[in-house]
Amino acid sequence: MFDKLASQPTDPLLALIGLYNADGRPDKIDLGVGVYRDDRGRTPVMEAVKSAETLLLETQESKSYVAPEGDRIFLDLLWDLVGGTGTGKFAAGVQTPGGSGALRLAAELIARAGTGRLHLGLPSWPNHAGIFGATGLTVETHPYFDVATQDVRFSSMMKALSSAQRGDAVLIHASCHNPTGATLTAAQWEELATTIAERRLIPLIDSAYQGFGSGIEEDVLGLRRVIAAAPEALVAVSCSKSFGIYRERTGAIFAVAETQSAADTARTNLVTMARTSYSMPPDHGAAVVRTILSFDSLRQTWADELNSMRYRLNELRRELATALSDSWQLAPQIAEQQGMFSLLPLTEADVLSMRTQHGIYMPTSGRINIAGLKKTDVARVASILKPLLG
Ligand code: LMR
Image (tube, rainbow, N blue to C red; front, top):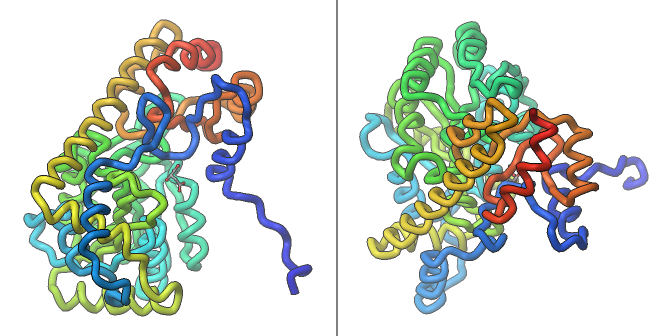
């Protein structure tokens, strides 16, 4: 049987990890996969996570199954953090293996119950189209961002959504857009929310970078505005970045509706889909997040750590923008954009030559992970980028 299969390429973004590790040059720089790094290039376990793990090690009495939907206390605490209490809507959540697991369940639910059509603004995280396509959804694309001008193509996006059909789903990045870092203004969120509600579209909101943009609360205000306006919504949450627990695969999908019973019905479907796929989610990361969010002191430690990650990112953004500003007039946009990523107008050949000649790694799209820069790298990276951008 296996000889009938064609070998598949490694995901290009994840392949960068291996390529970077195999490069022996001491001055190599990893601007590839979206992982936070400190100024020494490490992705340390957060202090709040270490403390929660210590507590769990001392107090956990069983490794038996938790529940089909995962840890209910984790789900309630996570929903408070993301959805808050003021949207006037009811949510029902299912714990998932990471944000990707949440997106996959959401896509299967849309395929089962909706029009089977999802609108996706481009560019987007490359795996979005992969996940949605794998469930049989028809993915309709529209422009979201113009790389050449570094602007959100808001009117093109609104035009596409204004002609979407009732019941169509639309993918929305909650904050820190991946791969562009380009965030909507409050007025644009308002207009988006109104159009979604008027057209009776189903927003599928991907929240993976809460705390990396403007602040832990600030980064979910747009999301909450859309939830408040739309009759129904799906919210996919990843804990990978905000809690730095990437490999623990921790996330959740929330069905949001006008009544608790509608949300609960959606949840029973999500649980059934999970059961026939991987049965139940892994527990450890969710137990860590539950512990952090349950204790005020741990929660404060976590918030302080996340805030300082954001400050570091924003400082690097400003420094890179300044270093590029004498040869690229759009450089100030790098400082305005939010989260880990910016998308530079580089060709594939530019990206490959930076890799081979200078040991600087990024995906061929031209996306850079700002967190991969050390302060001492900024001048060198800027000098290599200048002739390519100017
Ligand atoms: C990224 O975009 O680099 C991250 O979300 C990691 C991933 O899984 O692709």
